[in-house]
Length: 304
Image (cartoon, rainbow, N blue to C red; front, side, top):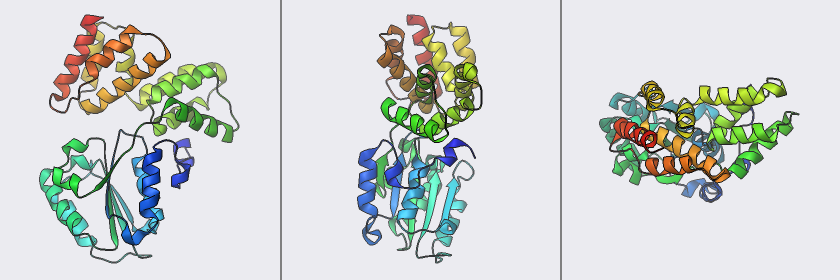
């Protein structure tokens, strides 16, 4: 079993970071009878949205058989949502409650979101919904308004170090400070990415761990290579090549990755290039999309 699954928290008290979110959810779920039936969890990939959703299911007394976790990258249409509405009328297979976890819910079409809105407005008493998204702005405002929303933020460097130390100790291993810093920097505050990198690092001899950490980070997140290219002042030709490979990915997610990476570098040393990157990437790409990402990268290369 990989480290991310092995050390996936099962209770709110086991989560690192996002203390205000976990405290609020603990209060809300203390009495299931008065708990909201629709939650919206936002935040970047790998920051614990679906983990929190499953913890909520446990706190609300939903059995594993009655949890339906669906990735809307695999279904987007109105017929799928109608099927959820139909099934929600049935009683649970075990226990008293059912839950649907809809991951990447912003990919639902507008018609599908409108169909979902109907059940969010009139949810059966035994049903709960947890919507997870990296891009809440793509949801209809009416859908967002029907949910109790929480933003999951990436872990701070201090919290990430605590996580890595906890896991390496449990595995009977140790990390050098250099490798630890590399994993913290490359994981961008995302615990899933950090543990996936750590999983690879602990499988190799100590003298190969730093190189393995860097390679694993690039495999986990292709935008890491773009971050490093911008920081090392790579020429536009190289940056353009990397951008072509990222064309099918969400430009806003890439922007946040670049921001987080540059921020981590700047906090560790006085680095003008990091500050320049932060300046060019500070504005969201919700309206400009991929062309906005290309222009921001081009501006960095021309001003360095």
